[in-house]
Image: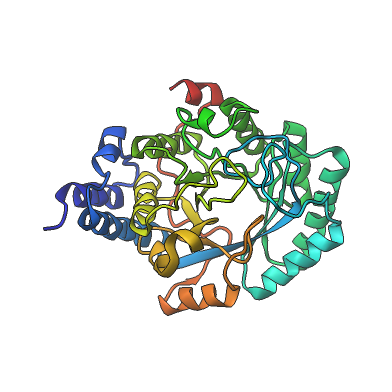
Length: 351
């Protein structure tokens, strides 16, 4: 028999535009077994279809500056604190970033993000990103994104003027679990960066990584923090254990548990873009095509920062076989759920 609680919450979400799931209701959705995961996914799929129709956007990234990062994030091979064996290099040239973006656009990407390691960029590095963005905004139809670490209000304004539309900055996990994952900066620092991007008029892309030892309750905690921040897009990553990092010995999540994470986030964020990013290949395997049934409407395509992804043509075929269509900027199907004033970071962290 179909889970009545899940069905009731899904019906409220798709019927009443301003209805918001409560923490208690979200906790009630935590699946107890495989049968409940299938029910959760079926309901999440209805929510996705209601607000995102059949559109899927595809984001490609470039590792524009690799390794030697001073942060100690436990999952990351780019940290100088760990022993992950990766290629390290300084800032790539603007021309290199431009050509990579054009190749990804030709391959089918709708969004392109320039990503760098390190806490933040210096002035010359920021200028390189901006020069690339100005050219790409004229030479392509890509939605341009950046993920450059901590961001000052001034830097955020500079990126906006150069043509960057969306800033990515993951919270990684819930506030209550963050000190188990990173000790070199505070959760409030990440919230301040998101506020700086938002104040400059940039869209915000922020999510986290599942499979790092967090509880279901902490996954819901993260989902609710992101809702209070009113982010525009939520990338969901799954831990890809990398030897030499503190989490290198963890086993990947089971595919159905990973899919349940996606579905739960769709319940909390019915109107927002949910993108499936790093770790999907090793975690989901043959279940990758199920991410849309679980509620996702976006996909990171091509390679990741330090690990390889699938061939883009394979992902495009997977999308086409399900009758899904290309998603581009401005494809939100409905206005934001809640029109109250965005809450300051201090309020969110203290809630």
